Image 1 (cartoon, rainbow, N blue to C red):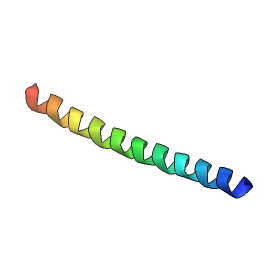
Image 2: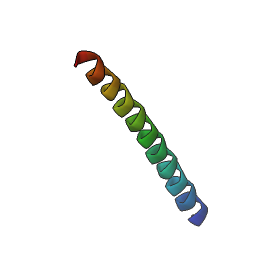
Image 3: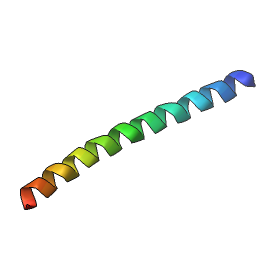
Amino acid sequence: MASNENSDQAARMDAMQEANENWDRQAAINAEDEERLN
């Protein structure tokens, strides 16, 4: 049972890290778009 909780937590951490990387990438794209518009 404890191992299931640990793997669930690890999966959540992986998902959060992936979301953060996606957010960083999108933020960079948005900044490029804004520079192109100005």
